[in-house]
Length: 441
Image (cartoon, rainbow, N blue to C red; front, side, top):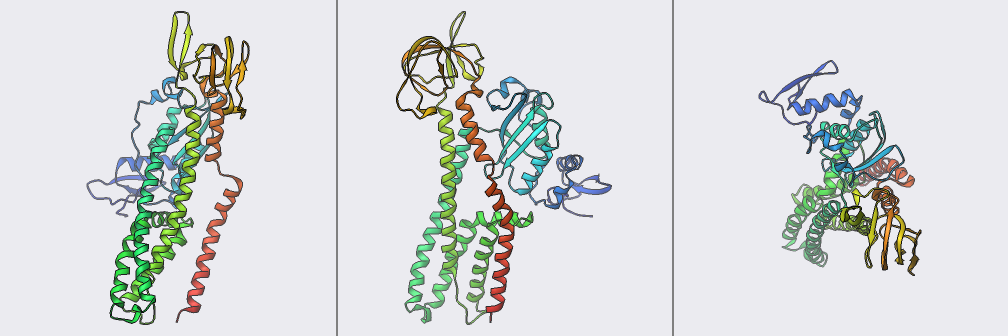
């Protein structure tokens, strides 16, 4: 019987062993949590998940709040996004989504639930977008299912996402700086060897110095490629990091082979390894920067809508969060303020800057009966505006939602590329192997 956990692959000892019958076969688990997750996966008809599992699966987790709180208006109102009547849409983020197998499991585990319309998981951003039929399934059941599978999820918030992205970019800059430092030093060593030191008394010294510089560069600066390639191979999916990692590792270990004296005719290529990693890191950083720009654009749009508004009621004026403003409420807009909601002017007049929505640079005059929109700037005059839409259904909210959908959904050409990549990788590796066999001595 196996001495590792059937679900997560961790060692199973006599003190922590949990034995459960799964599909008429007794399996060992390291804890009750892993056994529970495994049972949930099979009960959902997703046993094929274990055909592509990795060794880093997680046991079930506890929810942050009581179940009933997730179904309350207090929790849902700030995070539910505009959707078709009778449906609800929410974006969650889970930092425990780490590979393609996680994406496969989450999409299928939630997708088979009654009432779920669609589920989309973005591995890069670790975001889960879920749309469901209101009344057929509750958010609490969705959150509980994710927790049972080992994925701690919380509502996606732009400011938190920006902090996470900044940390990733900072870590990548450290790797680029380290690789750049070693690359410049290896460049001087290469120049020395190309100009006469290759056959002198310092030949071996320069080679060992190249080894010392290239080793930490490969395993520190190149760690993201090696990690992604490992998970790709474990999941039987040949991503682009696989040939990158194979190329870097093959060049490095061949150079070590020559350095240790097993080949008297070969050369070391430690400088090539470092240069290769540095160039790839630069490309990945530029890609991450473009994603950051797209995220910042979406965040900037959201920040144009005020979080609070001055609401006129029968007993006076009160400041309220815009998430609590209902259709028909009267909102007071003063000069220089951004309009908080979509509505109709019921009292007052003035000029509004609507360049955010229309692109028109000139202010637009507003008076009784005119429509105004959330996020636009009141240049002069005061208004009393009757809300005609909830904050999450405003024109600005729909624009933000459209931007987010565009970022989350893959275009047809990207989907086509994803299908081609495995064949491209296998073809590249095959040609490289044939070239090696033909040209090797």
